[in-house]
Image 1 (cartoon, rainbow, N blue to C red):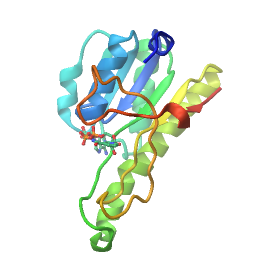
Image 2 (image 1 turned 120 degrees about the vertical axis):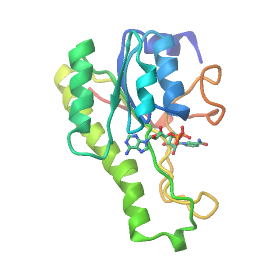
Image 3 (image 1 turned 45 degrees about the horizontal axis):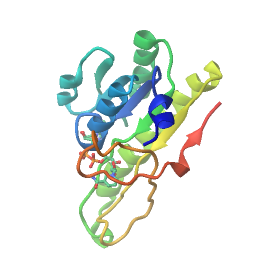
Image 4 (image 1 turned 30 degrees about the vertical axis):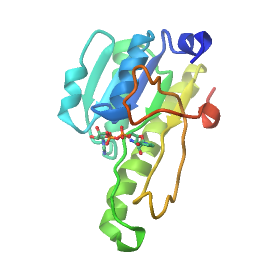
Length: 180
Ligand SMILES: NC(=O)c1ccc[n+]([C@@H]2O[C@H](COP(=O)([O-])OP(=O)(O)OC[C@H]3O[C@@H](n4cnc5c(N)ncnc54)[C@H](O)[C@@H]3O)[C@@H](O)[C@H]2O)c1
C-alpha cells in the first residue's frame, strides 16, 4: 500500500459490517490504525470487544429493517459524517448448489444481498446529501460451496496483510464505486 492510500482514510468515518471476526475485524483495526473512525457492526455480540476511542460497536443483524438506519445514525451522532461503507458481512452455506434448499438460499441472500443493499442505500443517502461521498466497498459475495459454483463474485477493496487476517491477501481496488 502506498503512502497516498494510507492517507486516503485518515479523518474518514466508516461503517464496517461483519466486524466481529476475520476480514471485517482486521479492516476495523486497519482503518483505526490509519486514522479513521469506525462503526463496527455485527450480529455477533463479540463485536462489543472492539469498543475503543474512535470505534463504536453496533450489535445488529444487517438484514433486519432499521439496522442500516441505526448504523448511519450512529456514524452521524458520534463522528458527524459518513465517508465509507464496507459491506463485508456474509454467510455461506457449504453445500453443492444442487443440494441447496430454498431456505439455504434465503438465508444467504438475506445477508449477502439484502443487507448489503439496505446499508448501501442508507449510506448513499447521507453521502449524496453531504456532497462528499466516498466509497461503498462490497467484498466477495460467495453463495455456495466455492468448489461447485460462484454465482456472484466480487473482489473489491484492500486489506493490509500486516494487519489483515491470514485469510485475506490480494484484494483488487478496481471495482470500488465512487459516489458524489
Ligand atoms: N475468508 C476468505 O477466504 C474469503 C475470501 C474471499 C472473500 N471473502 C469475503 O470476505 C468477507 C468476510 O469473510 P471472513 O472470512 O472474514 O468471514 P467471517 O465468517 O470470519 O466473518 C463474517 C462476519 O459477518 C458476520 N455476519 C454474518 N451475517 C451477519 C448479519 N446478518 N448481520 C451482521 N453480521 C453478520 C458474522 O457474525 C461474522 O463476524 C465475506 O464477504 C466473505 O465472503 C472471504
